[in-house]
Length: 335
Image (tube, rainbow, N blue to C red; front, side, top):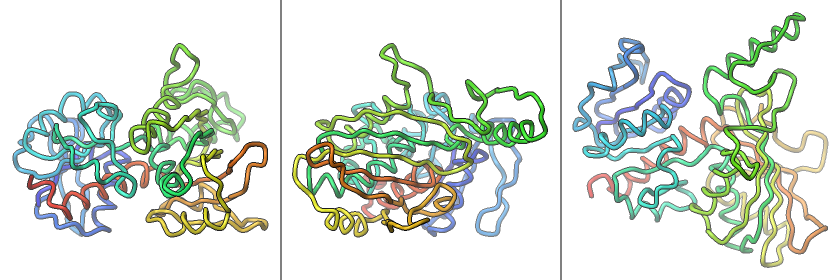
């Protein structure tokens, strides 16, 4: 099994390497790829140094699976070429809504892998990935009618540059210096920005539209979803306040039982000070955590949830590697 990682020097690329090392997939040869400016960079994997090679000159016939972790423009240019020789698992948004490309969270819709028409599999948006893994067991039991979600997203969702800028801005504020925003529309330090990605004509941002479209594609086209996505001065982990309306009646005990028994989910819900999980505590952990589980008494069959997950793991690297695991387990890469 030979594997390549495109964008190996970035946040998601490096996190993908960490997950691959932890998961111990049967890798014979590993190829780390990036732009020419990163060629020659050395990255450690399982105790060995691997040099980064130039993406533009790479022969994809050498590999069975290629992870793309370098953004939509790179996927647009190179994913199709890679897919002629290997199965592509793409972390960007470029192929997500392509009807011929499955959009996968393995615990939720692994059966969609039976339709890999272009040899490309899309990884969902980080905020969507952690949402649908919680919604899946509840939808199976109680049939979801409508979702209202507000996200509180870390700056790492925008890449390394926004993470560095948060640190710079925080230092500037504490030192009484003037803040200049480069990767944000307003100051992010000690602030909250209700704007992620570009605006559409109807006033929703692209991030909010992604959550709606991707949830429907992964889980059920009949579900109505409305979202407000907010960027917070947090390095890693996304949080979501979720209001769900079901078609069927439910009990809180059944909700908690279903979530705690579902792969990838963990309920931490004590009605005491600190009896819930925060973004800081979710960092570096594989699970999606669910807290503040309570009935919404203003609507019929309504439920409120607080969801927290490491966006670089569940929303990107971990989900991508779990897709690869599913492919290997079921010999999809041989078909």
